[in-house]
Image 1 (cartoon, protein in one colour):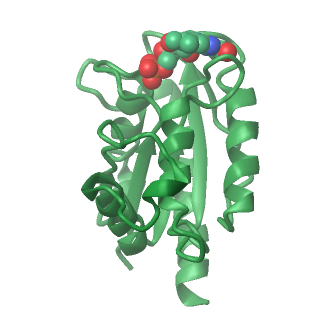
Image 2 (cartoon, rainbow, N blue to C red):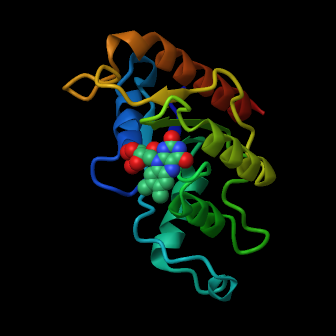
Amino acid sequence: MPFKIAVVVGSIRAGSTNRKVAEALTRLDAARGHTFTFADISGLPLYTEEDDETQAPEVKALKALIAEADGVIFATPEYNRSMPGVLKNAIDQASRPYGQNSWLGKPAAVFGVSPSAIGTAMAQQHLRNVIACLGMPTLTQPEVFLQWKDDLLTEEGTVGEGSADFLGGFLEKFLDLVALHARA
Ligand code: FNR
């Protein structure tokens, strides 16, 4: 069964390594037949409760994308041992207004890449805490802590040979989780 997957990348910079790896993930064999749509979180206003009843078009578009999705993949950088503010802002925006949390019940997977050996481990733990609070059943294994190295991706933007099986397995397990929740 083909699924619609929303991809939320916690870096809005041109040349983001997290975005590159997320795009490569969607080119793996396991991704075939499914639709992956990248959320644009770069134009979201900063969250304030005052806007709950008059959400910006960018917020409404994000909420609509998540509402349509069968599952969500988060790719997070690590900023100062946590997730970047732009990602937390996007999550907060789509969680509101109160009672209209777009993330609720959506199966999720988390991964991240950084130049350091820690591979975004702490950012991912913070992110897992937040999405658990929002009611997202989240893939627990495998954990994907990636260190950015030249051979992680090929020049064509596909996953390098050394990581293809690992990341393919991650994607397959996530799609199994999505299927489980689609049946429920
Ligand atoms: C970083 N970086 C970083 N890396 C890390 O492994 N742990 C950390 O705590 C931090 N902290 C941090 C703070 C700030 C403000 C910046 C700008 C950067 C480095 C970060 O992992 C690196 O810039 C990545 O390349 C960011 O991801 P994208 O933009 O390539 O997807």
